[in-house]
Image 1 (cartoon, one colour):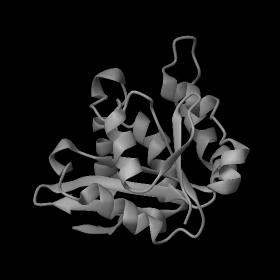
Image 2 (image 1 turned 60 degrees about the vertical axis):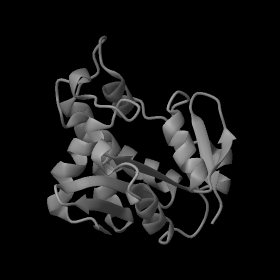
Image 3 (image 1 turned 30 degrees about the horizontal axis):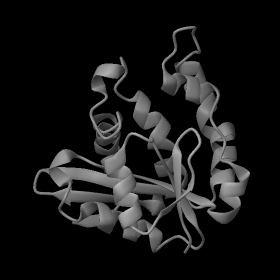
Image 4 (image 1 turned 90 degrees about the vertical axis):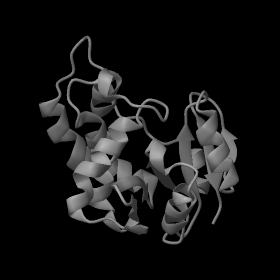
Length: 186
């Protein structure tokens, strides 16, 4: 079943983020704080654009999600103002800070050329038990129905399964510098 996000879903979404946060594989072994990845990749979306968050649920519970920001530049500005400051206090920058803490302190900004053609961006993650059952496509389509303009996603080069999924959904590579950026015009 695909449905809209409910506040009671937050912990499950954070867990899925962590359990898929290493190129689709688990990342629990990479972080001392199991909430850190969720704070970076789920929290601001459910806080600022909950209408663009959908979950997949099977007999065992929530098994995936898709979420988006309708205007990437405005979303990044709001994170700078209203989301990252508290996390910077909670997770201070140290010489050995992991990549998520570094991102909290120095968040990457969207390429303005990409954001002009594909202003929205989205993320989707499924637990292994949910893959190959149509949940991913249904989640993405649910989000796309609520967006009005182009949308882009970032995918690590080595995550060929994810690249194939997004291309199957109609996205095309629009940049391949640090990460692959795939875009879809709506």
